[in-house]
Length: 277
Length: 267
Image 1 (tube, chains in turn purple, yellow):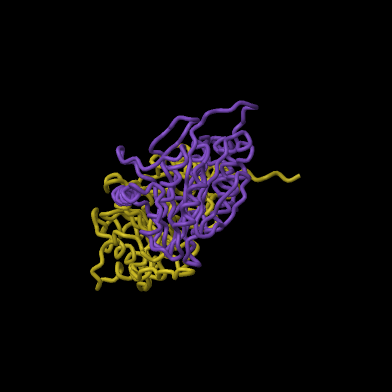
Image 2 (cartoon, one colour):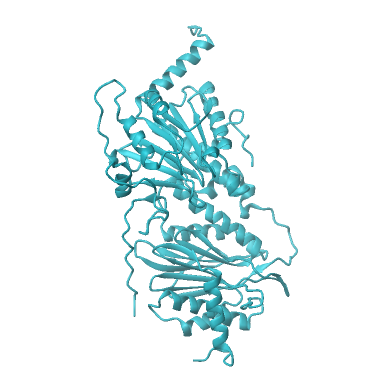
């Protein structure tokens, strides 16, 4: 971090004292652009085997939203990581889940978290849910050059909208397009199977235990057919990451509650692997 | 051609210092004081939107007296400094000492090099794991830094309040007692007139609460502040949990109304 550029000796540089912007991304774009994930020089060609994160599901229920992700990161045909976290708290009222190049995705999430907290502190007020969704879109858009070289990041954003008191879900494409999704959505390599599962399992006005079960079951179905999505790992006791966002804010479900949900699903699927009902 | 009058450097600096001091003395006072579970900030400030006390980072807060546009500029710079540091290193690497140094250099440069010094006095406080580890730094218009123990008063009646604090502040006071003492001293008229009345709505009160995880800064308003300031009420400390009502997490009102459950769209 360079604090000595410009101005008097040791004085905070001009970028710190500029008025007007409450965006952290804009500030580091001026002051230390090398910290932005999108401002990195790219090699002209060549492909890498980098860890990839896989399936994220999100769904709305009567009181808000549930977002869950499996824990596996893959590198080609190998498992790069068994207990990676892919669902993060963006702030008190929203969660972001990531699929795609893991290193870059985690960096974007980290920047996004600081961006929201920075806005909150400077402006003294919370950003609206759509404002947050649009900020994330801007970050993904500036990553387009990297996405075209294979380093793509596809997030999913969901949160509790305070004015309407409902949960809302937003999906993205690599060019930064931001689309509001209704009821439920999934991204990542196992998303086709998870979406199929949620279509059959989701009901309007579910309560949170039912929504949590649907999210975990959709991940189970994704792992069943997609080798890059991690299924329930009972021997290592690795469970999906699951965040619930409602009027009281965001909370991650603890391991014991998750273990109960996963074990119930595994028991129910014994002799009925497709979960027919 | 006219020749400019010669002004000795001593005179120049003295004039600038007098100018800044006069500006600060016109402002209302701010008191920062330690209590058993954290650091409390009490400012006489009827505005709910233009703050004199603000959050900088997880365990660091900022308080200022003087000219609003100038200290607001410093506050924003401080939030940028802290967030940049936390983003490029780690949240635990953001310290009040580093920020106080950056502020000191900035204020010092402005004082000597720019046409007009900043008419501000600021406090950067960091709540530690124990009261002994609390840090409170006072920075003045010329960039001098003082590491204060326990309490600071600044603004118009600063000196008078400091005398009061020296006599009456003790380490390990409860929050209720600390706020009561601060308001008592703010009430005094610096000109020696009769005591004024200060309603809770005329005060801006915030704390850095040692016990909270991550972001420790909380503003105190509404029934909770009334209860803490009232001598008839036995409330002496903050509730351990944040307000259940939806909204900003950094404001504690003491209202315990559960949030209204939204109705499902379709059922």
